Image (cartoon, rainbow, N blue to C red):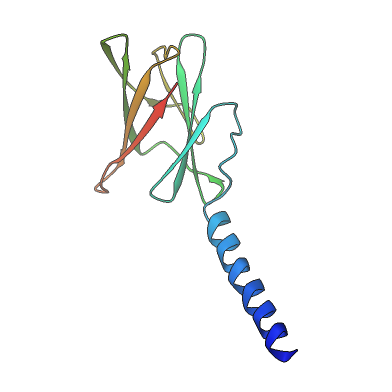
Amino acid sequence: MKAIIKLGLIALITSAMFVSNVLAHGSLEPIHGGVVKEAHDMVFELVREEKSVSLYVRDHGEAYPTTELVAKLVVLASKEKSEASFTPSGGNKMVAAIIINDGAKVLIRVSEGDHHPITIRYSF
């Protein structure tokens, strides 16, 4: 009986460790109706709008200020390549004047200061 209780406790503790690791960097649920990707412990939500796209950045579930970020995107669609740069738009939001159509592949490169750049890939 003691062996069963010990095994149960070990299983409970182990599962709690895995759950805490999954939730450590915040939720991967979209907050702004976009597509969410995680890269280098940060969460990036890309939102397609009528004539632009917005990128929201979170770190451990908290809004990450974008004033010091440099971000560019490449859109590959219908054998065409389009590029644009994001500009900070207050808080954790950046905006780029480009349209992403259905079926497109998107690459976003984000960097900050001397840190190595992060590349995020999206498919629509």
